Amino acid sequence: MAFDPDNYGLRLFVRYLVLCLIALIFVFPLVFMINSSFKPDSQLLADTSSLRAFLPVGDISLNNYFGAFRRAPVGLFVLNSVLVTGVTVLLSLLICSLAAFSFAFLRWKGRDVLLSIVIATLIIPFETIAIPLLLLVSKLPWIGLDGLHWGWLNTYRVQIIPWIADGLTIFLFVQYFKGLPGELIEAGRVEGANWWQVYYRVVMPLSGPVLATAAILKFLVMYNQYLWPLIVVQQEGYRPVMVGLGYFFQLNVAWGEVMAYLTLITVPVLVFYLLLQRAFIASIASTGVKG
Image (tube, rainbow, N blue to C red; front, side, top):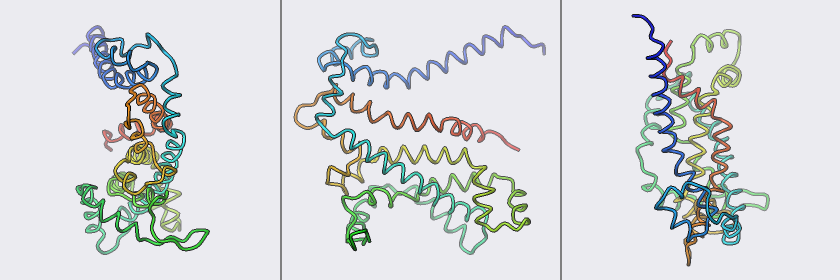
């Protein structure tokens, strides 16, 4: 069958048109949020019934951002979330990749059963274990620079340690590791490398895509945490951004300030994704490649 360049060009145009329309659907909420953050409440509410809601027109100013900082310690909340999320992501990538390496390459009794149990934890809603976990962490010991303490409430560690290891991240690493060429592992062992050397010299340098995927998914989960910080953190100095959102719904609700706050706390997520987008896209693309 002869190649029809005109038909191909039309199909390509239609494909990109559809993709652009889908992209606009996902971008519209962000555009609305950012534009609304610069408008006073009266104009914001009036513009919601027209396309003006998506356009930076009318009485545009930074007053909502100044108001957001006056209403709540926005910088502190963002710093807390970035700190908790960043530490959790790094520790999670290390611990979960080590566990997955053991499941994928080492032979030990009960390995498959334990892996099945780990994967099965994905179907357990967090709400069912929140209270038992709260009771547990409220009585756990901790040795700090100033001595022994009992209870982890109102600390960073209570927001980090329970979330380091999870079934989804381990499962992602296991599936990726099983797809790596077995000859590389065997070659490393033949050359005299121990399992630790195989892990960080052979396996991890090839795991950029899954590292990016796991990091982004973990980042989104941790940065958007609400229920757990709400029940374990009562001191303002340790509260993350999602709990801080409650400050804007006390007394009179200023929707412009809410939009300004949401815009500010969205910035770290966008920056993190942009830094890892290439590896993330490579991971998704590789799922359709065989052989």
